[in-house]
Image (cartoon, rainbow, N blue to C red; front, side, top):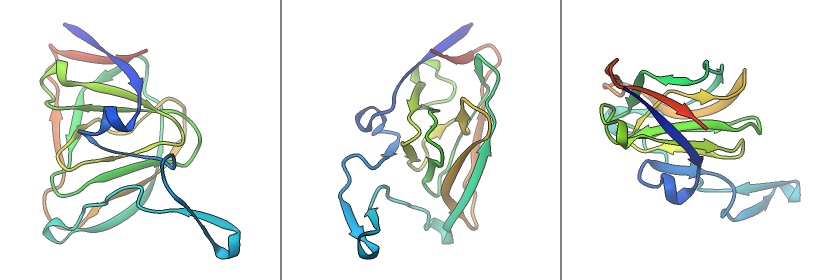
Length: 164
């Protein structure tokens, strides 16, 4: 049995139960640096302090997966949020679910190159999915002790694909 997951636009309302959409729209710009820069604060709530964790900032460079994108693995983080924000204005994909073995619980979103996501704690999501080669992202994640990664491999008889 193969199930195709449709892709929908990423919006605050559609993504709310999985975390936060990180974007400048709706933020309050503040002029700083003698008027030569603009700052927009509080775009996401970073939650990584459980069990002695600290903030880890990384840059990922991702490669596109073969089409159609076969879904084999989902992951979640019990001890902290995980924020992905693109460094290029190139669209990318976000895949989340309520339960990895329930094909009906999956949602796929197309984020613009000006939108990031901050996955809430324990939100099942797919590792980074890009549509072009060498897309770069800044990641704000948790570093420190404790088991913060849980992976779920999908049953082979329930193959999922993302498609237009």
